[in-house]
Image (cartoon, rainbow, N blue to C red; front, side, top):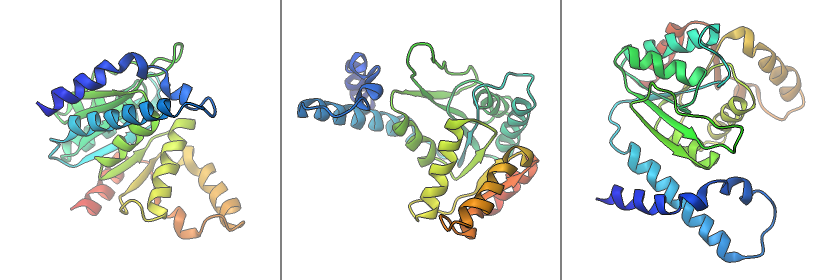
Length: 239
């Protein structure tokens, strides 16, 4: 009953919600009532997400990565293998719900009989991202920050596949939360050493040397090449 009320309230605001994130970031606004309206929309979006995932009973792993890799790409295949391995090990798989790496990880989990979840994002015209067809359940969000919270809140580990700005945003957000003690020391695993080695080199040779981070901060991110390595790290940390 409560879920129905929340969904009805949120649905009644859908027309106002569409495009609201871009409008919110368009600069200072003079009308305080619009800020209050935004706050209500954010609250309902958070609440809707919490209600949707409140019955999760098994541990879940969030997989981040690019939406741009097609089915034949090696990273798509790696993410698909990863999804299968996680499902076989008893973990649900959560992704951003879109194509590319997200689809591949959900697909692998689904093919192995595991739980496959998605938190899709509603994007402006020309950038639309549709939910992939391998999801047991998905939620669509207007606001990136609400979606990101959902991807973190219900996970016991995070796997970072190759990706672009969005993926970097996600990995730095998680490592910052762990660095500052806002998030438990959950495993954060980057797949494919060749892809991530330049970032790690920059972190060591520039950020550590300039004193913007400490050497132990880099240790939060573990880099592996094989899916079994990633699963083993998660199992050791969560059992």
